[in-house]
Each structure stands twice: as structure tokens, then as C-alpha cells.
Amino acid sequence: MAQALRTSLQRHGILADISPNLLEAGEALRQNVHDLLLLDRQLPDGDGATLIQLARRWQPDLPIIMLTGQGSLEDRIDGLDLGADDYLVKPFAVEELLARIRAISRRPSQLALPTATVGNLVFNFSTHEAFVDGALLPLPRGQLLALEALFLRHGRTVRREVLQESVYDFNDEIQSNALDAHVSKLRRALNDAGARADIHVIRGIGYLLKERINEREE
Image (tube, rainbow, N blue to C red; front, side, top):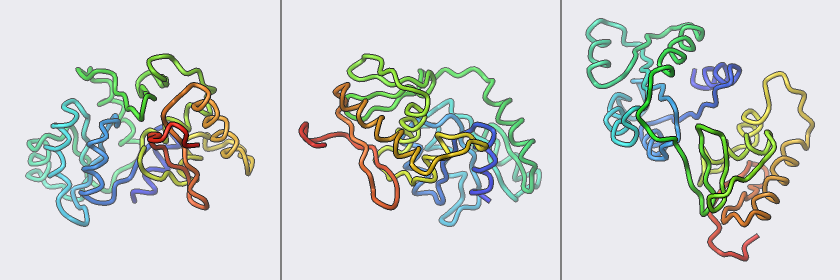
């Protein structure tokens, strides 16, 4: 269900990460880079509702929509009382979920513009801009989308198919080496700008964005 839901969201221009359990979801929340949390209550290692308190600690205004098969009135009240902003009972239509996402995203937020940092490289997810030592790094759209996807998962390997889905639209015709070309040009742009961040190629798997520890590391 999670994979199918992510595919549906990406077709509507929404980049989605999947965390299959409480442990990985908690780590994702600590990165403080997400705009919305779709939270299933029935996770393999416990009740997803236990993540709400953690989410509020790291991102007080993070919109949370709870997805669950527990649809009784008591369950819905319980989920909302625990801190969820909305509660959607399975099975549901993707169109309804999208409508709820649009509605909840229109609410004003008191958060500062969300950013993430790797070395001296900063990405602003609200303006979709990258900066090196405070200076704007101008990048073409494809490279910028690739960098955004890598930043969302920095420190973790991003599989080729995930990065490809982030860079290209669903109906795009993709050449076999197009993604490699985007990443190669992005690596060169980062290096030329003096960014202390490297994109490592994990052969046969994908790419990894990490801070450069050794200034002479390629």
C-alpha cells in the first residue's frame, strides 16, 4: 500500500519518503525537512500514534494525517486527541487524500523556512534554492531536483529509481544515461562552487550525499 500510495502522490507532484517502522520514521522526523506526515497506526513495531509527540517536538506545526483501518468513533476521537490534524479511514480514495492534503497545506505555518545543511551547502525546501557559504548556487531544474532528493535523504543511499522519479515527470521519456549526466554535472557544479559536500556513486544501487571531511577528497 505504501509503495502504491507513493507512486500516486508522485504522479501529482508530491515527493514522498517511506518509513516502514517506528525506528526509521523517528529518524526521518529528526531530519526536520518534511512538509507533511501521513501516519499509519498499524506499524510492524508498534502504534504509529506514538510518533506524534516526537513529531511535535521536532516540528511543532508539521501537518499530520493519520491513516488507519481503525474507524470507530472512539478511534477517530483518540487519534485527534493525540495530536493528529486529520484522520482518514482505510480504504480511501487517493483523490480524497489529495483534497485533504491540499486543505491542510493551506493552513498558515509559524515555522521558519525549512532548510537542511551538509558541510557549507544549504538547501531551502520552501524556495527550492541551494547556497554555498551563503551565496546562491544557480542550478538547472534537473540538477536542482536531484539535489533536493539527495538532501531529503542525506547520509543515506538514494536508489537510482527513487532519484529518477524525483527528477523526471511521470510521462517523460528518459534516456538510459540521462540521470548519470545530471548527477555528474551536479557534482561538478558543487565542486566548482567550493561546496564541502560530495555525491558518492554507490555502484549498482544509487547515490549518497555526505559532508566532505577531507578537503582533498574527490
